[in-house]
Amino acid sequence: MACTGRGTYDQFAIDRGDAPADPWGADYGSPVVLEIWPAQHYSPMHSHGDTTGIVYCLTGRLDVMSYATLDWEAEKRGLATLSPGMCAWLSKEHFAVHKVYCPLDGGPRPTPLLNDTDDFAASFHVYLNEDETSVEEHVPAVLSRDVFKYIHETEHTEKSFTTYSDLSWSVLRHAMTRIAAGGAKR
Image (cartoon, rainbow, N blue to C red; front, top):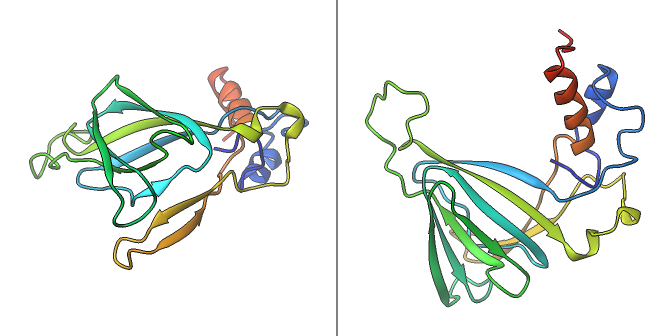
């Protein structure tokens, strides 16, 4: 979700009439991410750099290991276990380097429930970079919100990952409002 830039698929929504007249004119705020964590899956150790943010556990369980630095041999600072309703935070000074893991066992197989709580965890993330607090700093042509540094699991070296957004917030908000009001196009 791009809150201060264009999304890769915005033009599709615009062509369908699912976007406001000036979709990026008032597009500001914090990036918001819904992450689904299948049982036994994890992120690599990564850094959010200068970002301030929160991680809110919606369902399941997540273990978040904090590290002193972004290095394969980094000192472990602490483990936070998040269950539904619990929240963790990070800033450039605190907890910016971490690894997230879903320790759930996957539940019984085959499971009669599509959303068995042992199958996955879900978390809601809200981030804000210090240099993105002003509406006047909006740069509509930018697809990437951030570049994350991470440690490659087998090479143990630092790599970069550029994030991209599928839709901008204003386009998604406009389409959802129209659909909720019963005006969905087929």
